[in-house]
Image 1: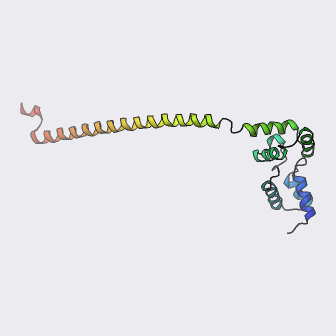
Image 2: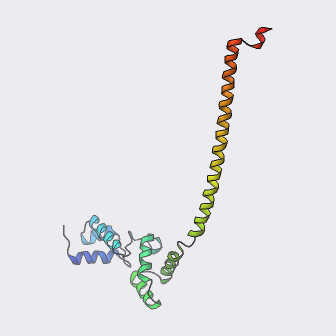
Image 3: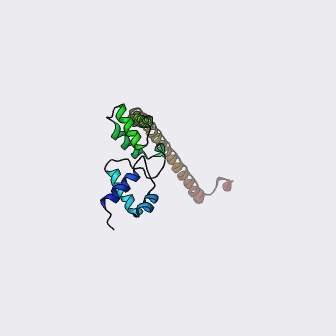
Length: 165
């Protein structure tokens, strides 16, 4: 079923902050199928809009939605940020915290990589030692098995030393 542009705009306005109405309520109110609403919401996300999937508080939004808000507000000054937050139903402190989180998200990566490389080298060294030890033990076991078989064959051919006496 094709929906008018006005219905789609109304639905989109309802699903975006600050309203962030649940899709089920929008479906009931406007008579739009939930699958269509989900499609429109996914299109919004694909186009860079923060469209939370439910009516959860802003702190419980997905990382993707928070990141999109950060991208939208990155170049705003304090006044513009406050105005933006009022429109979206957010607090400027929340957005600033999200910005800080995005800036420091990959901050520890080089040190973590170096640590993982060291751990990997240590594990590789240990693995080589364990393999070497296993090879040595397998050789000793094979030698012991060969000696036992040789002893049994010798006993079968010549008998046990106790039988001669």
